[in-house]
Image 1 (cartoon, rainbow, N blue to C red):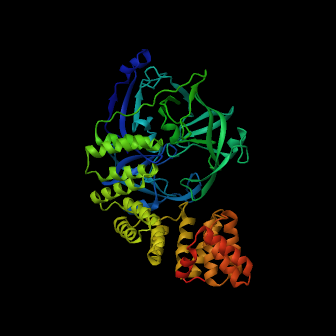
Image 2: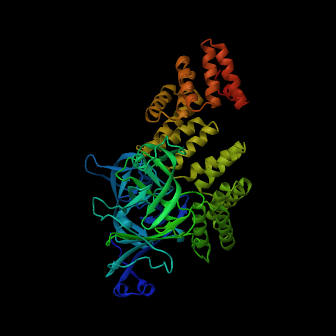
Image 3: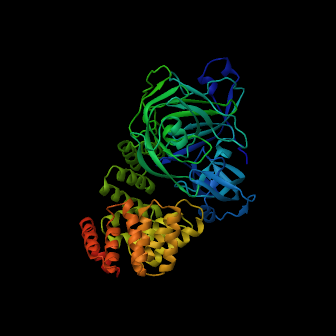
Length: 581
């Protein structure tokens, strides 16, 4: 693999001084970045097929998920025995694929190795890791929609923040990189404690290990700490997280006061992953050869959804106006719109996409992007109209069909939703990650055999995915609804619960299976476990009531039935139609 084409940057003209007089920086590639949620996506081609990768500075090597490798027709070879990939959520088995031609920024690269394994970690084909992003120096300019791969010459002791002008520049020493340690790692201070941090564009939000949080004086039971759901990475497990308040975080010469950070048992060598939420509010140059990092604060949110102030080491506020692209064409406007959306600035994103559509009204994807933004703005009707327009222009867009199907089901329009589900099924590749969503959607319209087929296909090509327990549970659920293959359903439910005992849906599913099988005492136990985690789950209340009635516990049965129907007044009719009584 090599970049054959170089473009010299005229950085010396931007920064006077003797150090710059001999400094040349060759641009190896200018990767255009589109934010999809909090993931920086880069368009590419694999053997001529269009793909999209997450630019992941936290990945030691580029990777493709097993499902996408199959979809691309890549041949796999074995890695040494015991070789595994590690990330948030643990480890996973891996194989190796070699791509004949990977095209990035119009540059063909030949015989490029990719690791194949683990979970799907984003909306694209896989990850671009440090074997690509770290071939020289790298500039992360996500706020302007770019990652630039660079190679300096004669640039020792230079301030590489050539764009700064009069802006304050922070500098941070980073650990030397080698084949065993390819990441961008530095020491930061959190509440005065030294923290080993990996700068990781692939992490949507910054996250801190529980051990590091404890060194900074915070645990999950500390005042002000709240549960924040689960995170997952390339590993096969999910990680429970909390949102915790911290007094001060110092990164180089920049300080962020009274911020909130996610904490969890990330299971890595690093104490902290500094994620895309930091990169979106900063422009960063990583000088790998010099073991230094330079960055400027570009304004706007740092870690919180609402803007947070950043100050320098002297306490001076760095509340600079956010710098943005100044696009003139539809593609640039759409690119900037998704940066705004990643920053939760939805009205600005909507305005940019509206202008992009005016300039290029035949681009169906712009309507789809605006639909996702308008859903975040709670403009459901306008979002549905945009999906209609998107699909009129691009009728084979499986993701748009899935989104519209969900909206139609929410509006109780089952016939129209069915049309979208079937269209997405036809359009999606056999190994597509969308098969998991399609399985759930077929279950929602009581097409149980079709749902099972979707889950079967997804599980076959995602053996180590962190969502495997969810897929097993959902396959068990549709079988329980259908009242068929109950032994297989029970096996799936048992497996899901062994892997995740904290999900009330899993116990609810097994309760329904046991109710169908006539094992009423164990059904009551499972429903009790579900209700201990989710006390207002109407399905668990109603199901437990039925099991209790079979056991002769009439008073308890009446109480549970009344509570269930107070939450979901028509649930008894749903159970009757399913033949459960």
